[in-house]
Image 1 (cartoon, rainbow, N blue to C red):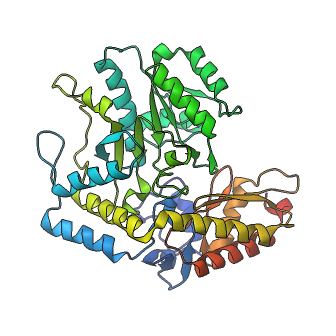
Image 2 (cartoon, rainbow, N blue to C red; image 1 turned 60 degrees about the vertical axis):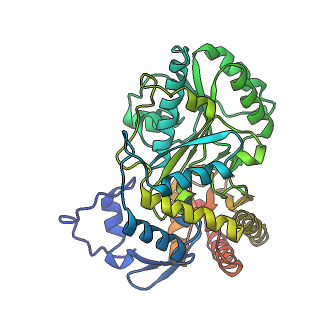
Image 3 (cartoon, rainbow, N blue to C red; image 1 turned 180 degrees about the horizontal axis):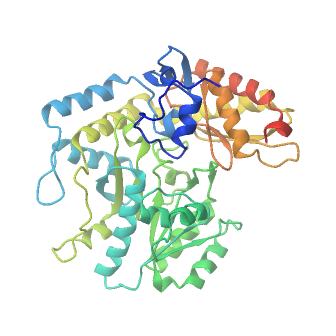
Amino acid sequence: MTPSTWDHGTYALWHGTVPTSTILDQSGPQDLWVKGEGSWLIDASGHRALDARAGVGNMVLGYGRTDVVEAMSRQARELPYVCMVRWELPAPVVVELARALTDIAPPGLDRVRFCHTGGAAVESAILMARSYHRNSGRPAKRLVVGLRDSYHGSPMAAMAASGQRMMHWLFGPMPEGFCHVPEPTDSSGAEFAGQLDALGPERIAAVILEPVKGRNGQPLPDAYLRAAREYCTKNDILLIFDEAFTGFGRMGEMFAADISGVSPDIMCLAKGITAGYSALGAVLATDRIYQAFGTSSTVFAHASTTDGHPVACAAALATIRAYASEDLVARGRVLGELLRDRLDGLLTGVPTFGGVRAVGAYVAIDLVDEAGNPLSMQARSHLESACRRRGLLIHYTPDTVVLMPPLTMSTEEAEFAAQTFASVVSALRPAVVS
């Protein structure tokens, strides 16, 4: 453990979901990341680490992309900001990005609203769904249904839509109008229909799903998604796909919806939309929804000062162009298959290895203790720290350990990631660390 050189009394920054004191005790100024090059991060001491977690899945193009940076710089010089909250007109780059998104989106998603993050996109989608029904003469349809253990963001409505009881306990009471059903055990969708019938479809405004679960990389069954689509269409319920994490090539298609071919009524985007170079979220909706907000008495009066920020939109346009010119979705599939196959070969027979799977460039490695139970979060934290000491950055969730590299990562870098990860896992002593 590196002795801290921070002054706890004067350190002003309050960190995220880990106690700041823990971070200060375990690190110092020499550990700050100061530069990124391709798939690598460099700290203040000059040590390099391969970022096999792509930031938090958002750095899909890696670091140091001059095309993205130059697009942002050019827009900042020309016009850094215009407000779209009320009657003001947007910058041309905002209009261009909206068209580019509808061109690559699943069929029927023809209208775009911008926000800042994935959580903000989910919150906007929820409010949009309820307002849509009210404007359409169905004010009783206000219930939003999600899956247990799902995660949709940290704003209050997004948190309420998430099925994580710990969040509700920490930050409750949650707002009313949300319900969670179990994850599917029957891929036919019959149990889903029964669950919503019990809730009363006349009360339900929307169902929100991740087509592939970000916690563990498990796709929802195609038949289940098709059944959800059919049920929602039949009962005037809007189907929302939260693709803040799964969108932009991470899961082997441009959007996870493309895996099943099921198009939602609303789709939430963030993270990879700008390749991590700026904060931006988007809500895509059908024209039918858009038409329900066409008058001064039905307008969707939900917006923020920096929605559709021109510099962020310039980053997103450059990112979308890179996807097309570099065939990055296909590259992500190749990377995922390479990592899966190498890890399977390197770890087969290792006691802690429970299996590996890949969905696009999301590679989930299940690790177990001596009793065959999933490794504890403490053990996963030890594993993450050991990998970092070896020059590899990984990700872990309560369900699994994840490699989710930039889609631009080279074959040689992927081989380094597989070899390093396997060597660290092979040295684990599950009875000690779990």
